[in-house]
Amino acid sequence: MTMLKASPVISPVQERDQYKICQLARETWHLHYPGIITVKQIDYMLEQRYAPREIKRLIASPNCNWLKVELEHTIRGFGHFDENSAARSIKIDKLYVHPRAQGLGCGAALVRHAETHYGRLGFKKISLQVNKGNLAAIAFYVKAGYQKEQSIIFNIGQGFVMDDFIMSKALY
Image (tube, rainbow, N blue to C red; front, side):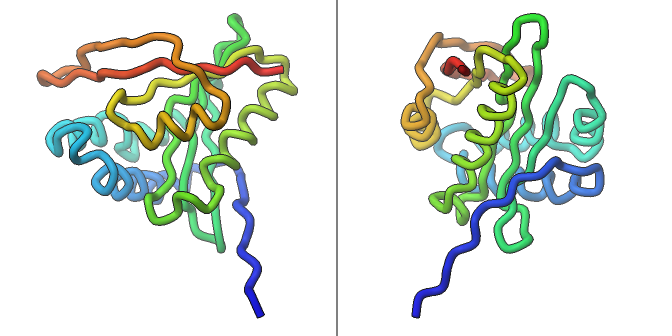
């Protein structure tokens, strides 16, 4: 007899989730990004973008939407979406699934949920930045229908740069 796998459950991130999100980001980045960027840059970016106070600030922002994806009542991933109502566009600012939960449909569920939600609200475009060396993420987004739009390099401080592709998809 085979056991049915639980389906990913998407729900809004609550302020009480900020420490779990911080821990999940730390684990995910340290498992995934070495070899793509240095450990020093990983730590710098985590402190800059995933400190509990920063997550709390963004959760409270009216132009941001944080979602978590859970399997078996455990947060396995999250997404942070920046809304630009004037341009009718959405930026996936953060979308991460713990490496041990990848391939279980969590990332795809988050992306589909965001695309459906924002499409219903009349948004026309969804975009993101992805590190050029993050081949697994690039392949994931291409499979989901995103296209490379631009190549960018910009300074993020402390001698570090982000060397990314901007990818996007039209919402209907």
